[in-house]
Length: 194
Image (cartoon, rainbow, N blue to C red; front, side):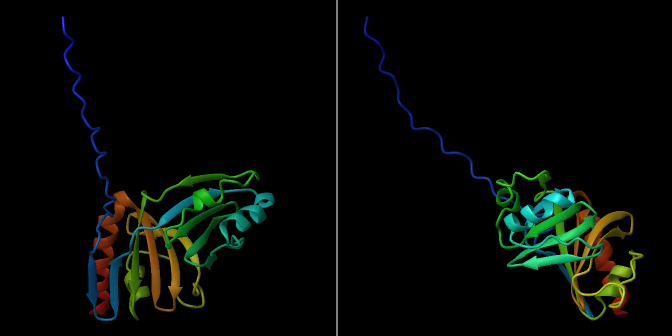
């Protein structure tokens, strides 16, 4: 009895997976204020005791801020102080902060949250007014200077707010709230322009 010739087939190519950012390309411009979705970034939630901060700062390439309402930036990477032992690290250059801190033996907890958050830029002379339509944070330059960072609320959801310039802010929120936040900021921008 002759054996049937085994049919050889080439392995199937792995399906291509493309990351599709939430709300990509959405922009609203009004007089004196613009709201736009920022490109994807790498993000890490970091918790660590004081004794671990120096080792983590060295591994991440920037000094983790230790004071409330502050941030630190270097070469496309920003760390926002969220609490006495908590930071959000954002890398807009595409480098993975989670990988950079992997060799640190000092006690810490790090979780990659790149796909959880969406960020918006709110810019222009009326940027603070648009954000203050739903955020109780005092956004005067005296109370919230450039590089200030805060966990706060906008309307009905939690946001992280970073002042990047006198008339520019980065608003971070969870992806599931991104449409709400964008719509809220868009309407507030139109009202601020009026």
